[in-house]
Image (cartoon, rainbow, N blue to C red; front, side, top):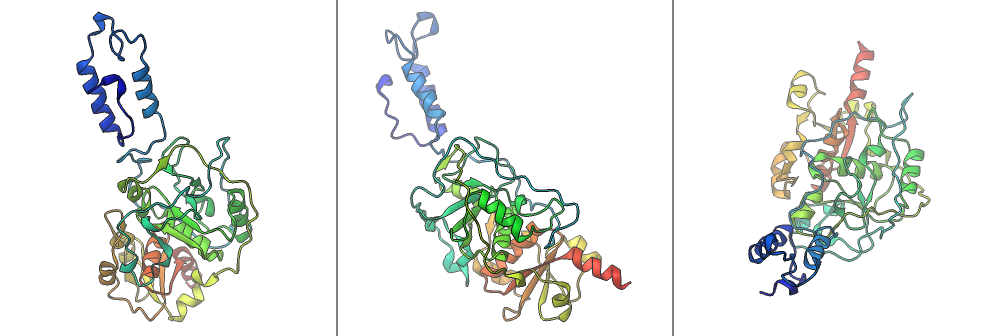
Length: 357
């Protein structure tokens, strides 16, 4: 091996690089001999400088994760409409580093699970990401310089909801998406650090409610992307501001009290089992967000069919909870399995029940 002439083309991971550095240190003369890392008589530390430059570059490293988020479902209440005294959500800040706003090339990876679900249209497989996709990173814990999908723009899921969990009105949502450089015609791919957080599915629900149909959630989120050793970057990406015009709202996606009371739909309780045991809507079936997940992703279609075995696929299903993130995970799974699924806020049910006392 020629220490001073090592090629970088074969390096793909930090562990491999470190092993090379260790090997070099084993062959290098001692510091007392006055030799640099480049070798005795080299007169420079160019090899070490090159190694350091490589480690500081945006080359994706297999197994490097993003933020150390847990797989637990995020917490928050929700309802449609504008509450009184709601605090404005923080908008996405711009950075001077402007990068491509969509994936710069088509990424191909094996393992598409589309055939596993009766209606997989809202699921984005790793082998189906194209150059035209605008990628939204909706992780709430993203920090500047943290690894993310190449070309993705960060619009935290919480931006789509008020601090008390209520879904923002159409005007607010249009402003948020327009400031992020998104238009109503953009095909969107949404992901967060972990699929189980519910951030991606809650954002997808908000966009579908807004009338944006070309929107999909990445199968498995960032964790799955990293496991497939697909490209990452640390440079913050921004798009020029745009004008977003909401389409006809799909208001039926958010069920109301009268619809729930009519008995037209089968009710799915996505709260905790303890909450389900204390009080619930009549004839509701308990299905927790955790029960539709497996190894950080949705269960495949066969296993979800078992999970939903007590439900009738020919009837609408309304998922209710006081947590939009958890409810959206179950809603998303039902949609992929071909159900006409909707979401209903448990808080609204409680409010009506208190009035009737």
